[in-house]
Image (cartoon, rainbow, N blue to C red; front, side, top):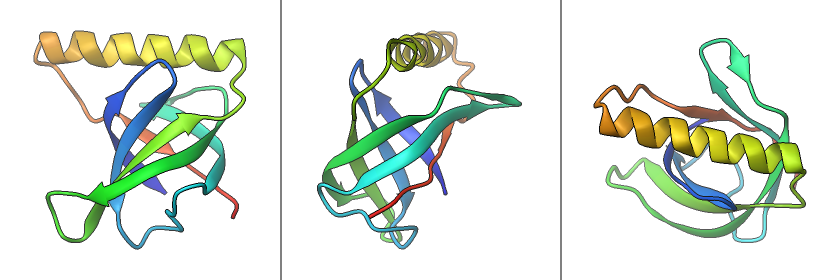
Length: 105
């Protein structure tokens, strides 16, 4: 499953994805998540869904997730990714940042 990162913080992120992509109820845990850009992939991390809401498009949904038991490497990669996205926005060179997610219910 590929989702577009809408917002990212120190402890979580908001994703925009197809509403029928997977189970997206509050409390659902996604395991083995990673950031991916070009041919680079981050260390896997786990997310728990904290909230959902409709997206601008009726076929999509916004999902608010929080890191679940992150390692220090996960935290460092979240900070690095957040800084890279912020810098790209300032320079108006924002390419799509995606997250590749697998999950269990």
